[in-house]
Amino acid sequence: MHPHFPDDHGDGRVGGPFHSQKSIHKLLGGGKVADVLLWKDRNLSAGVLLGATLIWYLFEVVEYNIIPLLCQIAILAMLVIFIWSNAAPLLNIAPPRIPEVIISEHAFRQVAETIHYKLAHTVAALYDIACGKDLKKFLLVIMSLLILSEIGSSYSFTSLLYLGFLCAHTLPALYQRYETEVDHLAARGSEDIKRFYRRIDSNLLNKIPRGPVKTKVN
Image (cartoon, rainbow, N blue to C red):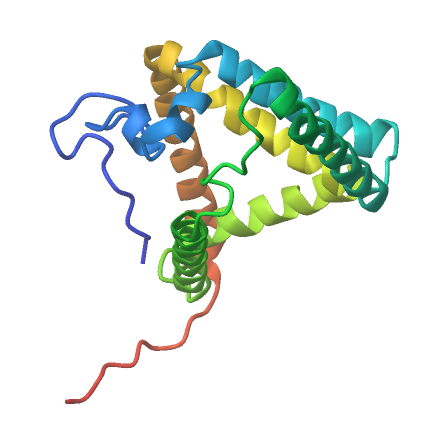
């Protein structure tokens, strides 16, 4: 039995496989994070990119250790707060205060709930794929994991994290700018992959013996 291939244009909408009625901003969750990823505020997005690049440079190129780095950052922060607190009465300025967002219980709870939801959703999706309900997705995930394994053996974990950050920080903005061209190329690539899979399915996978499908008895 051939696996089911969803029709890209079955809902009457014209567009590539990435086309959606929702904007890319909503697909990224909206809010400040989406604004940063889409470079709505160029200064903030550039600052985030510069900070991530600096962190990658310290750990990967300079081979800085995380414990000394955290200790030195804490020492620098304490010195700044000490000087600021003692100079505040003389300069008639307000003493430093810890921003509420840093120690907000609601923010920590929201982050934990988001991570839990994403993790549970990912595990459930991988379980469904591993059960073989969609052979196309199963083979695609296996191939992706093999490629990721080869990449991971060639690069350090820090470089992989930085590469993933660069992709997340640049690809959404590039896609939003060149959406039509990307959708066109993706649609052509999707059709080529489907034809290739059908050829493998008819020449190889259909020849694999499979046991009879058991029906549930009520």
